[in-house]
Length: 260
Image (cartoon, rainbow, N blue to C red; front, side, top):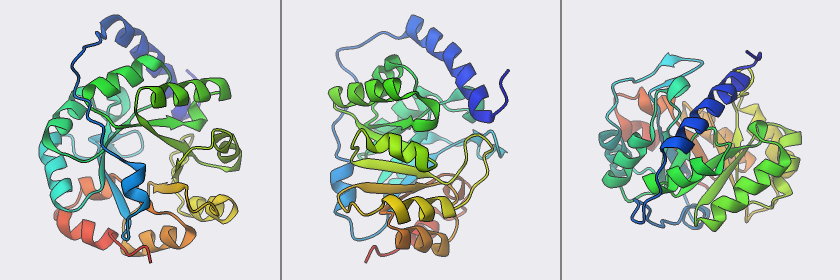
């Protein structure tokens, strides 16, 4: 098996996709509701928070394996989350599309399907489960595949969070002129986290005020959020900090800084 964590995840994902293609049945009636993501985020005057439901991760192991997705999502919504991210990768994050379906029934917020998407069938399944936004990771996809999946998602009335981690991936992403770019402070090859990634990339590429930049991973304190806000991020994606919080409302309040 290949060396990096991302390589291992993608290798496993090929198997998952093969099984999904055998099992997936398109339904006329799905859980899909069109709920604006970019439009609501770009107009906000406080930091937008995408609150994540995540049972485990390759770097941390179990985080909150017993979480009830619908209950967690309801708490997030009541505490002021602007969107909810649901991890649907099973082998490495212990999530499923059923988690997303439960969350869709419980809240009226936009839902991001957080997975390593490499095939259109995953996009179809995410939409049917009730997602409004899908994640496409530049590090996981060649240019042609990235463009193909990006365009397909929009044809399905889904929005896309296009994720990058370095300058080369940012350059590739910008060729698609996406309205939303996520900057992952976590290196998917080593899983190390550095908020300086957001600062460095937005210093070079953050001039377009119509583009929504989301800083992902590593957000623990108000000071962390202030760092990425000053860099130009208008949204943050927060998983572990909220999953381990004993008081979600209090934690959310600490992260909801003014965008100014």
